Structures are given as structure tokens and as C-alpha cells.
Image (cartoon, rainbow, N blue to C red; front, side, top):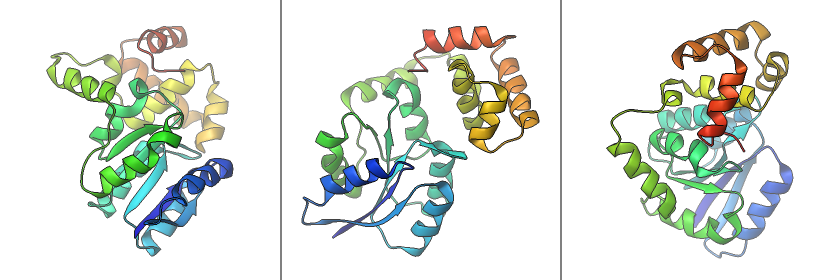
Length: 209
């Protein structure tokens, strides 16, 4: 039996995923979580063979959670589930230790196949993502946003979406001062001065929806 834990802050998404998995006689959802804190509590207390992790959770980025999971449970396969296209997060999550990356749009058709793949020790990636990974290894110079930490990258995307410092702080449970500090750092790393430059860069590099 493949025991699975689902981590997503939307109950309707968790129900949908369970509905897909319940059709498989050798798969069972043994736990659900809607936040990072709930996720670690359940995963630490429950035996499982795979975790389905949403990349966007309140209070913490999925990449941060992924890194902590891989630190505590090195051999636990984690499948990233995201509303974001592969260009935005896939390479970053695979490098951070994810066993696969699946968009929510393709989940109904690909979820079971992806879980079987990662549980068997493989990596589940699309052909498009495979090409992106090869290109990433081949290119000599990395794009500017590759210099950013995971939190800086997250805040950069939120700024690019037009969110104010106060709003970002509320969504990430950070003070406005802390968010402003992150903004200053990412502007320095990317040789930029204004939010307009961030927005332009994010659009050009397909980092926002």
C-alpha cells in the first residue's frame, strides 16, 4: 500500500486529489494538512511513502517546506503540485530535492502516474521540464533571479504581481520592515532600483502568471 499525505491549503483541492487516488486499490491518503505547521506535525507522526506538496502555502513557501522535509526525511519522495507554470518554479524545486513537479491543471491525468514514478525511486518531470533542466545545465550565465534566496524570489514575484509591502507582510506573516529589507536585498542582487523594473523583468522571464 502506498500511503500518501496531501499538503494544500484549499480543502476542495485536497478532496479532488483524494477522489483521484481513492480509485487506486494500492493507494491511500493517510493524512491531510492545510499549513506548514500541520504538515510537519502529521508527517512526523505518520508513516507514508509520498507527500503531495502545494508550492503556495500561507506563512511559508513550498520551497522552504520542501528543504526542511528533505533535511528531516531524506528519502521521502515529495511531489510538488502547483498552479504556476513550470517556467516559474519547477527547476528551483527539483534542485531543492523534489521528486517531481506537477501543475494542478494536469493533475487529474498525471497524478497517479507521477506518484508511482517517484515512489519507485524515479523523478517525474515533463518533457518540457527535462529540456529546461538540460538548458539550465548548459548555459554559462545564470539569470538574475537565480541569485535570489527562496524568500527573496517569493517576495520578488509578489511585488511583480503589484502587491504592496504591507499586503506581502500580512500574507507571509512578516513585518513590513522585514519585507522592505528583503526588497532592498533583491533589488541590489538584481541591479535594480524600482518595482517597475521588477515587474518588467518578471514579465519578460515569465515569472508571473
